[in-house]
Length: 114
Image (tube, rainbow, N blue to C red; front, side, top):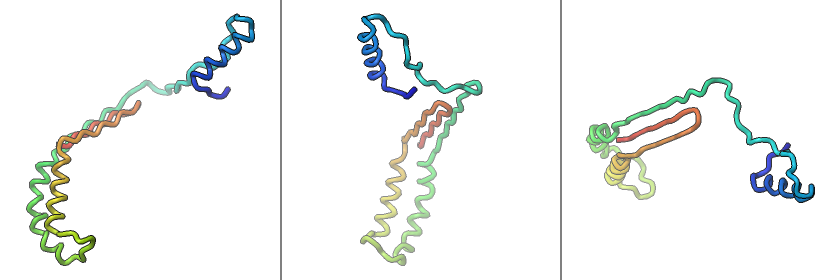
């Protein structure tokens, strides 16, 4: 039997009851579809803590030292190399405190960026 939304299922049962003279019609709608578990339910939990802010602060001097090399690259969109390096650094540092939480029936993944 085809799946029908809950509201339509109730409507069809009400219509069958009305046609049958008010008696309760047998339930012709299958129960809710549930997946059949082939193995015991074990949920995998993955937790990852990434201390990226100290890493970015340690690597920032190297990016600043390499900034003069960006003057030899053809400039597109009128970008200034020093402003670009500082902007990308600010963007990476603003990721601090980000929490990524993915919750599925089989796996729970929690990633914290500090």
